Amino acid sequence: MPELTAEVDRLSLTIEIGEIPVRVHTTDPLFLNLLQERYAGFVSSSEHAEIDLEIEIAPPGSGDPDAPVHVSCFGGRWTLQRGDFFAEWEPARRHGWVRQTANPYSIDAVLRIVHTLVLAKQGGFLLHAASAIRDGKAFLFAGVSEAGKTTISRLAPPDVTLLTDEISYVRRQGSSYVAFGTPFTGELAKLGENVSAPIAALYLLAKGAENRIDSIESGEAARSFLANVLFFAKDEQLVQATFHAAFEFISRVPVFRLTFVPDARVWELIG
Amino acid sequence: MNKLYIARSPRVAARSLGGEMMIMSGRDSTLFTLNQTASILWQAADGTTPLEEIVQQKICSEFEVDPAEALQDAETLARELAGHQILQISERPIPEPSAAGEAR
Image 1 (spheres, helix red, strand yellow):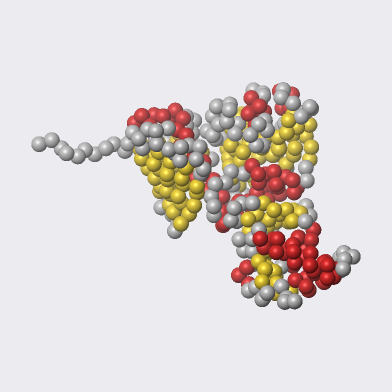
Image 2 (cartoon, rainbow over the protein chains, first blue to last red):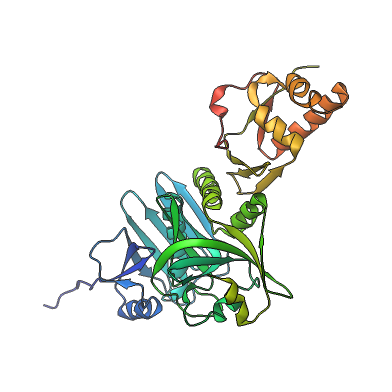
């Protein structure tokens, strides 16, 4: 008599961003291949995972990726929700699950949110900023959409290692801050290199008629910095922690206004 | 007129930087930058000192203002800050647990 049930193979992949390994599990080999391609350079062979996420694949066509994100915590369990995914994560168990269609964008959003929550507890954050390494030092270029993050990334000379053209990954290590490469891309659609370096400066981008670096007042630095921090959760404690972390960053990392014309000479000012 | 007491809300985070007092609402992440008078009220809002006393000691001693007018302005400002849930305001002293995410 034939078996009425069969064990389904559970496939796993570890995606390590900012030295935080997240292992995703799926039963769909095509989706696993898609993730391997999407996160090439960030796939880890590490046996250890900080977080395990079970992916449940929903039928195609379900959900709206442009719907607002809702992130909340109740009883130690985070709920992450957008039109195209629903996820839960329990930090104490290091375990969560995601229901989404077989696309890379939903899991990308889930990973970004989970990383912001993990980093917020550690004094780090994701930032709307391009970042790059030159001579062993990392530089961040922050700004809203159209501020020039992709432009300055595209103009980077060959001796510059690009970490991201869109979302920078910042962790606190002792009394300094380190920027890591991310697979979170902007218009450049090019994954950052999976490397890291201590942050030497943060530049607030402005387009202008000349290339120029100006110092700015600490209050303006703090306001601009906070405006560029990615934060999704409606959680008072985490909001307060992120607020104080931002001020710690501002007190330890030099912040400047970088006005630039869109040509490669701007990089003569960086380094 | 009844005495008014003001206390910093425990639901915000606050920092003073470069002479500016910045406060973020924990509820909706809105960022506020307080002006000089609002900063004075925030710093003095211990929940036990009446607003009238704060105005006399911290505002009238620093600025040439009419005490009655200063108190009226301070009350208006305090109510506005309370509307943003930055301050708590009461006709009775406000007990301690309200010691907020204060500037370090």
